[in-house]
Image (tube, rainbow, N blue to C red):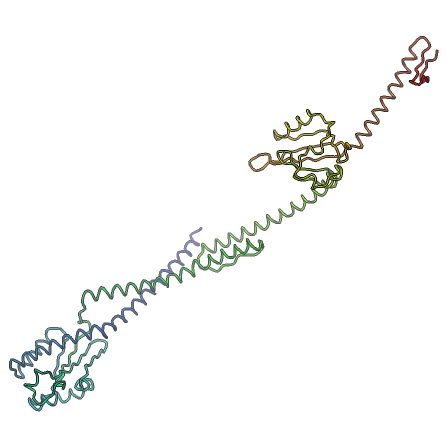
Amino acid sequence: MDNHKFSKTKSVFLKFMLAMLFIVLVISYISSSYAKNYVSDNFAQNEVKKISDLVFEVIYTKMEDGWSRDDLKTIITRLTNLEHGLKIKTYRSEAVEEVYGVRIGDAKAKEDPLVQKAFRGESVFFDNGKNVRYIQPMLVQDKCIQCHANTSIGDVNGVIDMEIPINDIKLSLNTIITYFLVFVLVLGIIMFFIFQIMINKLFITPISTIANSIKNFEVNKDYKAELKCSSKLLELNILVDAFNNLLSKVSQSIQEHDKKNQMLEEYKKVIDMSTIVSKTNVKGIITYVNDQFCKISGYSPDELIGKNHNIVRSPNMPKEAFADLWATIKQGNPWHGIVENKKKNGESYFLNVTIMPLFNQNHEIVEYIAIRDDITEFRNLQMTQMKDNVNDALEIKYDEVLEDIPVYAIVVNKDCIIEHANNL
């Protein structure tokens, strides 16, 4: 792979990692915003309620010991200075104002709808994004009646209006760890599914497409078809191109193989029409015969296949000839010779035979093939001519012998008939 192609691959993975980083940042931002709002809506409310309860208890304790306006103002000022940004205000109800008087500025503050809601006995929690405001009504209890005789238990004697920055709200370590683990778990699950989607798109889906296409090629045997797969990964595209090139070569090889097989079939037809062919296994059991073999032997294929080849052996053939034949072909060499065979009806026929051993990939003999020419008619003609030549030779010899005899001589046959005589 050259540097240009390799840079493309790195570019794909770089884009993938940048996309993952972007997704992580987006999820982190959304999660942090959600967590911040959740903290504001839950933990901040609990936190400021605790602070409000603490302020109430401090103020009430001072009230039990005897108090003045300056004392309460000093207490609230000190409590406010405990936390930066903390603001604490208290407002009296009308019943308290009847006994202890109206404070300057309370009337305007009571116009606030949130303060009015608190005077109706409801706790008010308000978050403006920067500060948390909590307005808690101070309800009359049994211990309050002795000082506030003009009220009943459950009445609102006043409200505590407290405001604190969100950033100053403190959470427990267990809470932080718990929500951090929940955040990491949720983020991990989201990232897992996103990563799985990306992996499926980049790797699994293209590879699955390639595998299914290869399976279709195997089933349909359509090697001329082209594998198509769209992927942003260079390696997969190279794999697809290599597979298509392989398919092209396989298709070409198959076409060449089909041509050769067609030519071999034509050769086989010619051989089957003109010669006598048979095949046997290494034990001499017939595994194949052509029509010419059946025609000259008088046997059908079913009568020959599975039988030993000596079914057509003539008793006139000497055993030494077959011993030489088997010794030659078992050594992996071809054997040539004249063989006399016997037909199914007992007649003899003569063949000019060539036997070749057939080998497997390990160069082991697995079969023998025999190709024969029928020379029966030529053999009979040869024998007839031989006889005639012998007779002619004998006749010439008789005449020459009689001429050389110095006395009268004749040759008679078994019937005492003179066949030859000299000139004396």
